[in-house]
Length: 115
Image 1 (spheres, rainbow, N blue to C red):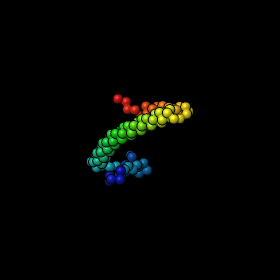
Image 2: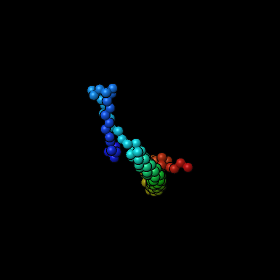
Image 3: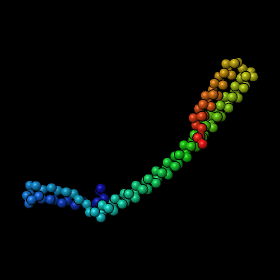
Image 4: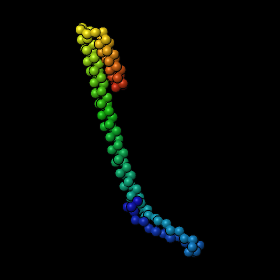
């Protein structure tokens, strides 16, 4: 609380100078002003954090949607390659592309939006 001006008070008990205590005190009016100013700053920060959370939620939703679309596109690409391999390729290639298509669809399910 470097903003407040401190006052030192010495207290002597029972008139004996050996039993004295020294305290640091602040003016109530000044302390209340500083507390009100700090509460106002805290409210501004809280509002900022709420706004940031809203923006982050939107960005997270957008990123999940993009990842979902990318996984679906890769599954379609694997399907096309599987169809091409079925026309002019060995059976191993057909199984390979089908396995990868299923993997991409499984990953896409993780990013699918819950409605």
